[in-house]
Image (cartoon, rainbow, N blue to C red; front, side, top):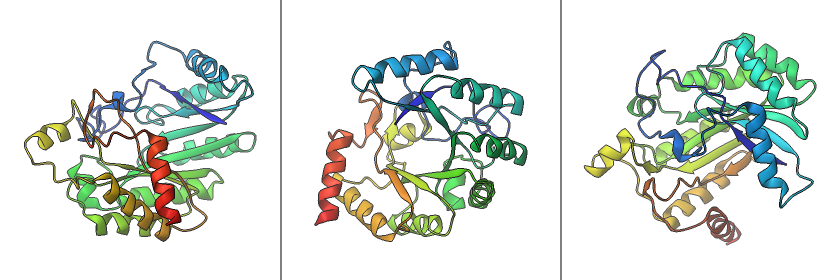
Length: 275
């Protein structure tokens, strides 16, 4: 089963003026979805993804992953049309929707719960941190309480629920990171993603970092692996961890430059866990 990343043409409410401007200080969307699909339909994007993976895995099946920006930031009718188009494609067995906790109205949860009766549906919330002081610092424009509320409403509707957190956000130390993990343990989540704080060109964070004002934990690989081990030891056992690292394109990444492929990092982490 392979995720195919979909760009639904969305923006974010802290970017387009709905609740703020400028977006998160670390965000350059091209760093995690460089092949933007604004000019391609959902069907075309899925067909392109399938043709890419089918060369190596001819029997692969797929999940359509609405990753770029906020995957629920549009009128309900528009959203359901896009989701339905993705699910109508051959070999697509479900959808994953990446979004913000302040962009999940009850009406949409009701529609997704109905959809869940016939296919796989997961909503992945960008929590990033459970510290409001951090969320304010990074211009996230939502609160930890909103994340908790969205997770509880989504899971109560029978929809698989995931969280995304960033380790090493500006102003946070290791104890604050572990406090966020402790809160995750209290929530009805199925999956959690972590990744290291990355400084990417073209962001406000990059400008701060270049002046020595970013206030981020500049982990070495070994220091970050030690943190990941602590998280695994602390995290509730029924929560699946999808990842601990993300990898921005080399020409966009300013820090950290560990020189490791994702699988190399995973091997080192597994060895540390075994030890």
